[in-house]
Length: 216
Picture 1 (cartoon, rainbow, N blue to C red):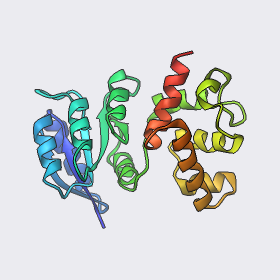
Picture 2 (tube, one colour; picture 1 turned 45 degrees about the vertical axis):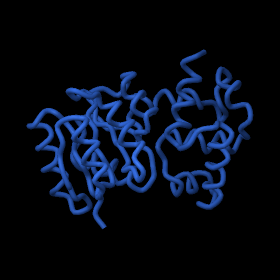
Picture 3 (spheres, rainbow, N blue to C red; picture 1 turned 135 degrees about the vertical axis):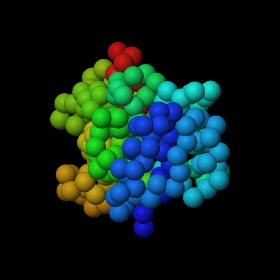
């Protein structure tokens, strides 16, 4: 089944070009476009959308606010931010508001489609800016970096391994293959990590690592 996508951007050339590029792919069904935050939230609330591709620089309502409102809906679609830069604090604010990750506007249609498919299936997508910070924060043989031990001291070595791979955007299957575990075991590790870090999902866990590193 195709992933139903809503494209949100106030620049018609980029918005319509991206929509056309994605619509040409068999795994994507572009069900609508919107040029501002209120229209995006209204379209998402109407249902029939799996993933919202959300620009952050929108008129009348910021992309961060539109993301928060979309993610607060009773049966929300996944939100994937589309941005020009991957280390902007606004991107991290959108992820804290509930976005499942982000892609750069310079990405190809196929790259964006792969990210869309990932978040639609419950995964998270991080570009190189956040991924680099996460890898640095969780480096050192899979253990949390010494500066992050205050937040992650409760994690076992194996849980730290899983968190490091999770921060790279790996799926449960990929983590299982890398560590020689079953997918069910990885799912259990992820659940324990989220519980220990007191966060709701993979994106929030990755942000927790980033925040801890930045506070050093």
